[in-house]
Length: 266
Length: 254
Image (cartoon, rainbow over all chains, first blue to last red; front, side, top):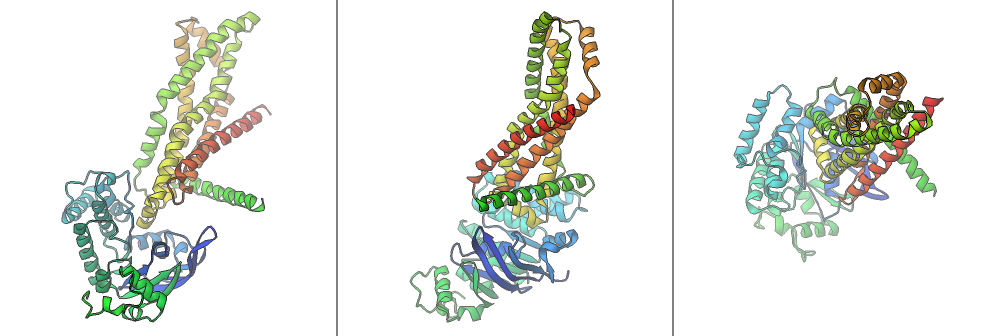
């Protein structure tokens, strides 16, 4: 498996009779950062989970390097999981494991040849860089939301994945943690990792996004290079862009001014 | 009505498929490279070892009641020796497996369904999948093995406490000669009684582990679904165990 190439082919996901992902086709460009935008409940998180193969589709195919992701051999799937990581919106840390054990576990799964001590040393060094060397034996419920987010990042990055799924990583965290996470995402993007992310921070989006996907009611309204999408004349696209950028009254405001080189954010 | 029937059939097919995958994963459990092999030890400890005191209390009390009632009533009809047959029928063949199953449903099936349900709601299951861990192999199989093995072992303990422990307790009220009691007990205890008892507890173990894990993982989005699925696990566990008990007992006498 050279590079991780993921695409959706006419994928639909249903919750009962309701389509939460509705006939979506798209490809994620390897080595690029693709940002998914959409209003709350539009299906962004579900789109990420569908692309990651965490949620089975009711129709269509999720294709990884030419093969249906649900038809991969066990070894192929394990390899894909080693090379990809998912940061969940609500952290999804394993409640019955300590902070150290949460970060330790992916190494146990993907690097069984490493000794326990080697894994432990790697985890401790990694967490030390984030400033959490004193909280290693705490359970996720004993640490703050910001700390949990950082631990979930550490868990996702400990195996040095090529492909990252980031589901609203800045949601509900303090400014210090947000600053650390923003720096981490910038570094990962600069390193050429493939990133598919739901983000709401306009500055971060304008800095790292190579491509934008706008989602509305489970459908992809537009998907293309960042500059192309931000110049879209589609009124719904412009409305969603302005809403996400927290400009509620900016329906007719020039969205370019918010993201443009001369607009102050770049 | 048609939709309801189709929905029930759909659930039944899904549950059957889930059971099949759980059995396959459990059979492969010891052959495969496993992460977190401690899960099965913890399950055995919680379901098997920690339930021993409850099982001992129930079985000793039940055995003592049968002996005391039997030695007082049966000789009046000239059937004093029937006490051993009754003890084996009640303790070994019938109530042993059933009461052990009920204790495990009350303690462990509820705990397993709750734990798995909360893991679904907080996306911990998805986190396992994204890490490359198959939830059936990692979460279901060890619970399947642990619960099944525990029910069988608890049944053995139940028999030991019920047949031996109750004898010791009875000595305080109705002394029976040691040699007479155990000689007659072994005389009436047949291999088929032991096989029937172990078969029942094995099947009850499969039922309990299946209903607990299946219903726990049926939770979809909301934490309010968790207690609903726990109730389903308990009701289905009780019902299926009683039905299986009736079928095995009927087959025994055919």
